[in-house]
Length: 220
Image 1 (cartoon, helix red, strand yellow):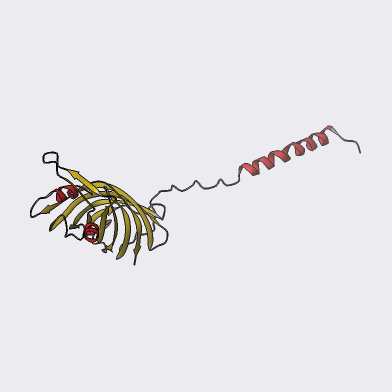
Image 2: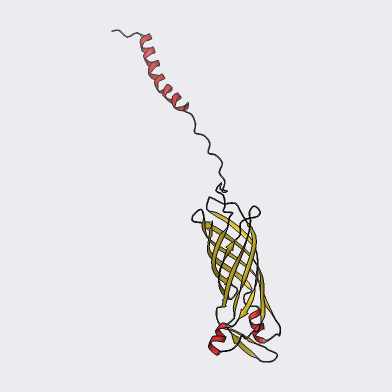
């Protein structure tokens, strides 16, 4: 069959149009939706009910262990707790009065309660929140090691031990009701006695300074 110029022109036109149509179809495919904006704040609600806490760490040069209860929240993002705490000097504490030359050494231990109040952030990424606040320590200081080994009464005498501290920390939730925490802070501790003595002066400031606390919390 004789191929005319018109036939050749039509054939070339169809051949050239095929890839063009394919590219056009590809370009017309719907574009994916733009990614929705994200935020670190999670919709997961933070626990607000009754809770319990176990912790250990340092108050200055005093190591401690504590256990207590976390009260249900009365206001959004605020909480309070009450804990029983026992502290002990890491080593024997010594003091020398430069005026009189008197030197004493003892191993003080503090027993009391700690009331804490503060606020916390929303839950971040579904498992973490940060918090901060202040706490008040009230108790008494004893010298149980000295009383046991040397059969002596409390070297400090009757006393009231007190302290005020601030703290900031983070909770990491490993389950909807359980978390472990790390916090740091600092503050001041002292005591009052009926009659001042070198042992009271030695132990009064122990516990002041930087604080460090780690532990776990469980919420109902």
